[in-house]
Length: 273
Image 1 (tube, rainbow, N blue to C red):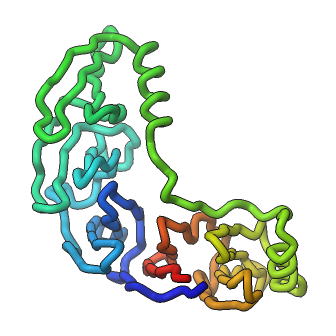
Image 2 (image 1 turned 135 degrees about the horizontal axis):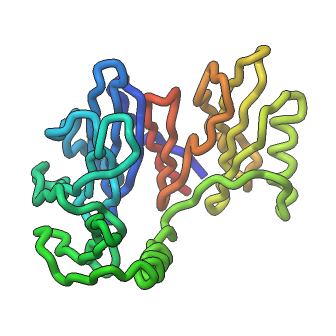
């Protein structure tokens, strides 16, 4: 097994969110928290080709991502700055970098079978609708169906395909003796905070741990081993001086490792036999 660096991304600001679309596009949100600006960047994950970078929406900070369907990103604004309530929906097309439609009167609920389920808050309760994904036009008025909506939302969640993802799990012990031996040898003489998180992909073992290096400092280290050869093939310090355990430092998508370094850099590694 080999790990080959495909490309890396950094604009110097904190990486806020990493998403992968159904069409293998890497969608990254970064934030300048001092100037209160949000930037969006998009790359073809498999080729590394940049589609756009440092893109800003009309709302430059108080917005968030609800969902991504195909190459359409659904955003929300907030009812008030610094308040958690979501307000409105606007649909952004990654390929054209244009807003397809926008409606401030709805709030997002979920997507199921290429329909957006949204609602309006009324005095009597929430009133639900389904909308066309590409146009925002009303398909159906569902009314006040809170019990049915819960069932539909649960069904929609179960329909999301995570089969291409491999997220780290907490290491306790393994049925594979070689995995146990590698992790124990790497961490035997190291004082660790929290747990070792690991993934397996064919004959590749990747894991990270937080080494205690000072009274209040942690170093987040990532290791990758070829299990057949028992050989280290990659090593990276993800956070040189962290003040707390940071989960979700990396994950696998298809044959790619997506790695977050120092909270402001994304490294894409290709896994090759």
